[in-house]
Image 1 (cartoon, rainbow, N blue to C red):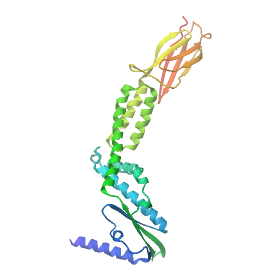
Image 2: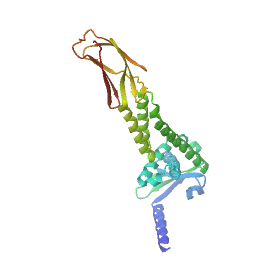
Image 3: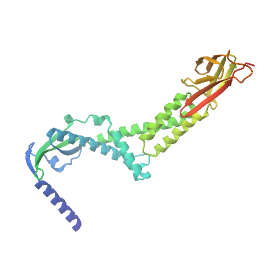
Image 4: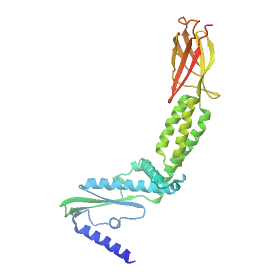
Length: 302
């Protein structure tokens, strides 16, 4: 008990010392009770100091935004369904930082302005040690539990969309129809991995690796070969896949006249520079991710 009284006495002494170093030069009228207590249910009350009244006002308004963001982040973390708090302090702090960053971009935050301030008050002081004058601006901004709950619900709804999207991406490898779908999924999962700070982060990173492995499974498979033309498909296991990319096509003797891409791709060529006594071929090569996928077709001169 003596320790508590001693600590409180030190606080009062520190406060008294601070006031002794500041001289009030001007005020915006009689100081309201909320500006003295700096707390009132259903409101965010902040204060800020600056060299000018306008700057102090803007800094106090910024603190309102920061306080709302902090409240949203704390509420989201405390009700997280992703067991963030069980993963250790580092993950919890990273997750909180991520939530804070996202909450800062919420539409509600963009609407915070001086016009919505319910009440304000200001004071002008002289700091005796430095001889500098400054303003202190107080803001009383309406923000109740219902508004906080609405913001948290909106955030959690967006968070659930991410979870649903990850589930959709988990099922997609078995339904891939094009190389571009693989490309898009890898990019999307990369963005998700960077933005997440819970158990889903590792999940999306592993899923991204699964998609990259699909490139390794793509084969160029011959459909039909005739003198002057070759047709083929890209196959992913038992399923055909498409791509809008044109391959690099080379031959040791033939002159390539046309490369047509589609569900079935075709290569038309002139073979007058080819001879039957050597092995003549046309090589098709694609670049998917960091993987080269190629196949050599023999030219049937014999």
